[in-house]
Length: 330
Image (cartoon, rainbow, N blue to C red; front, side, top):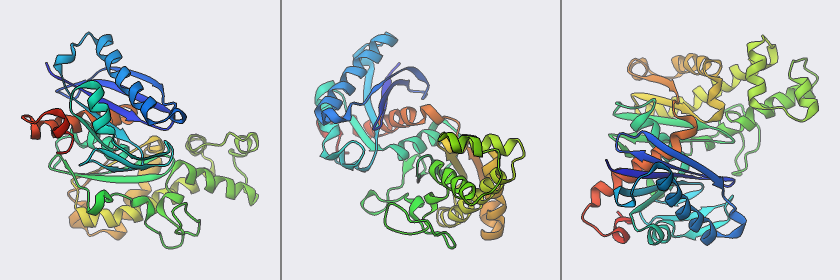
């Protein structure tokens, strides 16, 4: 049996998983990123974690064919470079080359959202479909598309920033400089913002206690929804409708077989997805919808690790005769 390592690199934590050729997660460990100590420290830690997870699983290093890593920010997956990652404070860090030198196998990197969606396409809610369009809803919102087991990148690897499509009628300023971006509504922070603004305006809700304690979260909104809270239901309805508007554009452009909704806020499930479907019916030609399935993500916490491992396997298979330093550039 051959194995891949998948890594999910975040500003707070690094998750390292050993994945077999059937995309099954064999072993997983987690450690703090310690980004403030610099990229060399973080990459050395990642190399150490690879050795640790192999030892924990009892797998010999010679059975490891490749390492994949999902990294935040703007990534050049061809050169294996983190061009810019604000939460890591990295600029032009040659992750594939440096980590490859440390572990002695091909290392491939890509944006963390693309890696999550690739994992869902290969082994999760999108498995078996030819065209998978995925959206992750967390602190922000981003998207990726997988066509015949290949990621679609667009020019300059910038495809997928669905969260920064401005939506008519929305007025909240976005960190990108635009106003009314999709992610100002459809995100954990967007859901909480809607609740806070309504409570500030004096609306009655079960959410007020959490708001006054300073602990209000998107999960609280989902819980209040289930208890019949009118404000929570209004927020989830509006959020789902706005997401439906955004997806109407991408569904028409990409004509996917499956749309996967992932990320922490996707755990709202049908509270969110029911208004998405209703909105799509009014905005998208039925020929697209008749062949489309919308699914909640299955992998959630492990999607980035499995997706990174699957991505590494797909890349190394295309350059199986190349030495690892060259393989990182395929």
